[in-house]
Image (cartoon, rainbow over all chains, first blue to last red; front, top):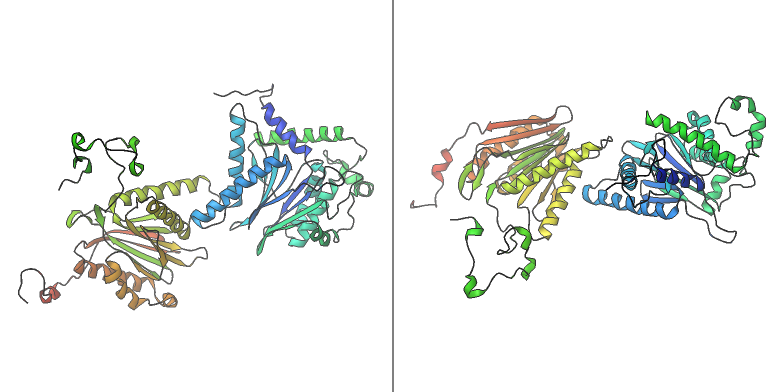
Length: 282
Length: 268
């Protein structure tokens, strides 16, 4: 038996809520070249003395995910992926392909939108991997969609990171691993709230690619990468002053007004989301 | 002999009591609760040797078309070579019903793989690993698939790939391979052409094919469960899978037969 609550435009309400949960999570950014894929994530701690919530999970030597939303759901999904990767290794003696991994996750998530009683996963994922067809980045959504990107950002204020990626993706198409990480950190920095900055404690970095196993940098290992940035604080004010004219043409541009409150920011993201949805529905 | 175990009967219920399905994990759902679960104890209809060898651009593999029922040459149209995916072949000897089961598994595998076509093709090493797991799982249930198989194709680096796996899950690879009787009769001949891995580079397609054809002839001379009608598959990067069916062992000479002594009623 199936039971679905729909609102007037035929979307599933519980799926809408799940997609909303992603926006509550802190931002993660992913980007790829042909040979490498990088994830960077902003970790949150519940309180000053508490530890930071893990944002990037290694799945296999060649595969990993970053999450935005409900961490327990992400752990369930990453355990499932590890199982699948191990199974592929045991039965076929080959690594799980990145695309297959993202499809498996999407199918699993879609099942939860189909029947009554269950709930969709409240988490969005960025999946990176390197396999015989090169480096890949996929964005997973609890609605059961899974799309490939060269650069993607999900989570709170991720639109700012996406704007950075859209502006620079042609530069990093042929970047080295190191340059790619710096681009990722720049994008992540743009998603920061006004009074925050990237530190070695709140930043996670992962890279995978040609001759590079999936490597996760946390805590002290992050410092070497932060040292490569011109600034660890959000420099949107400076950028806004500098090239305001060019960017105003971009209708989704949120560089201009920093004092915009969170509600307004998320309203804008909502608008963007709807636009995205229309494109995928075509 | 009546080969249907269900008609063999069992000790009289009146004398010995009904069959206790609780013994030895007997499976009462299997249709006939009066009988225990039965596993394969021996092959019934069988196919004889599969022989294969590498050459510098690929591999060649051959198997005859005979299905033997014991010593009886029962079927002369059994195909024992199965192309899988783009560049792989599986050659199967042993029980023919298990061969048919394996061929269905391989078909399903290929279909499943094609559903999520993502540029990751199913190559010989993957298929070999899969088969090995299937064989080992079945032997662990004490219900083996009674076959020896050879998987040929290209490995992940694009080099010729040849590997054996059998009913126990035993696997090994070599530049020349043969199952069953062929391991005794064909291997020495093939090893004259390729003794070790580095010799593969020196052997071209023509030489390899001729060596395999010669072996099929020798096998027909000396293996009483063989046929001179066979199939051969040659795989190269250039031409892909070339499947030749209904080949005959040519230029047979049975003159050596009169010198074989020590069998039957003849006086030596």
